[in-house]
Length: 473
Image (cartoon, rainbow, N blue to C red; front, side):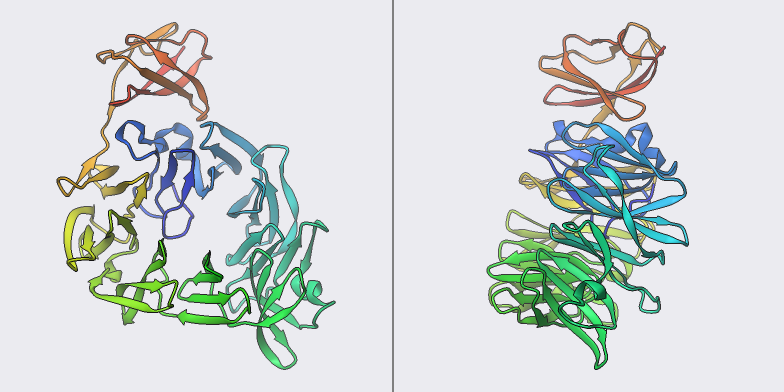
């Protein structure tokens, strides 16, 4: 399974739980959790997940591009997997939010063209908008409720940036869209945040960089930007995090300034209160953890916090109980390290990856006040753990596999467990759809009304979680 999301994992929020997963690499998995052991389940084990070519994490679920050329959507709210569309010989990239529950994404016909699609996560609401240019493997899509733009990040590719105007429901070359306000020869870079376009254009006088206001149609001077990872609005400023830069825009004057161009291109930007933590290049392949103050715009580098970038393609960070936790690479694995800001000391919590450290990616995130970390060990697999502050150790989320019998069955199955009160059982079919959820009394489940096929189930009694599978004949 290949997970094409940014190097850091993406999360999709539910009322109290999230779906989280691991970026490209070996032993990649997907979990659903609210942080507690009873509600932490590795949903990757559903049979259909083995068919995934790419998955994309969005706010409330997962978009799934399968090897069979189907686009699926997995809802975190309903646990239902919906086949949205079949697109022959195409690959799907980069779903981005487009307001009001809709998403835009690129669909690339191999070696020919890129097309812009839209989806409201229903079958009828998933369709092609139009052609956005040649497919070159480096097309980037950004969107706000006011517009969407596509440009190509390969400097050597001849690609004219496009804009989708949702009011006119049309796709134009950005230079044509700008024509009533300014004549430009070409637009080679474009990204958008709310009503602001950030552009690199070619004019008769040379290359220029602009901020263009989509409402007032006003141009403001800008700077060159690399591929944008994230926007953050805070205290009258817009902060732009690119592959290597932190850029600040004063939203009252549109004055723009690069605060640093030394960020780790494979690293993480972590916002916590009024601080932005990132990894900064000191020299060569040496990267230290640093923080950028969102109020006074100063950068502080923690000289003793080296992430060991050469052995670490997954330098994740998290703030938990006032301490900084981060993944640090070493030649034969990765460690989870805790740094105490007060005492300025660091301690290794546990080894979270063993072997080829550039292949095994690990998760690190705080969920509902609980710090979660995954451990990727080739002989043991990839499992989720939580940090126990009392012992200072990582503890496993134990989900026990139990036997269902008879198997195959026709009327009911029995589970080899000791029955307790408050048992809830959930059954899923082979397509990943939830087909039953009910209170369970005793250790038997009636399945007579299910259609023949393969099923798996989760039993949760509020303390323990059990997994089982069976065949209905």
